[in-house]
Amino acid sequence: MAFKVKFLAFVTRVVAVLLVPVGFCRAPGRGRFLACQWALGLRFPAEDLRGLAPETLAAFTHARAEAFWRDGQLIGLTSGYRDAKEQYRIFAEEVWRTGSVPAARRRVLPPEESSHVRGFGLDVRPTEGARWLERNGWRYGLYRIYDNEWWHFEYRTAAPIRLPHPDAAPWRRP
Image (cartoon, rainbow, N blue to C red; front, side, top):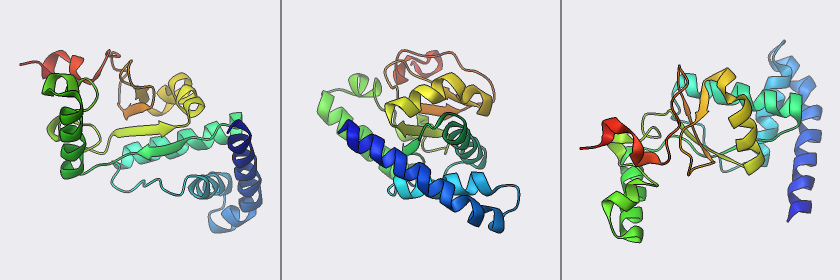
């Protein structure tokens, strides 16, 4: 498995380098940025950036371009924007799986509280990409929010206090 991941990362980098001239033709001064986004789109074909708040989209795409070109780190999006119906489905499945609303809230929030529904939440991969974002994401307003979710980041205009889990926010308690 590790060989496959490294091989795909290598191929993604080669594709990005080959796409740089096309990117410069398309948008002078932004060729590397575009080449990175295209290559990562090929590497992570299931990711869907639609629905993200404009500031979240800009922060994420610029952060992952820096990670890619400066440090050779690939960052893909597992889940971004979710409509309220999808978020409710995920929450209801977690309630069923755990047997209670309080237990489910430690992993998934209902739609009215989820940053994904507002377009500010990002679930990223791979683990190394999340580590890069945890170290560098603050430059773009991207912060890991919960101790129990290494993959979950949110766009914020100021650094938040990290919480142990999604249900730990004092304002969310009845």
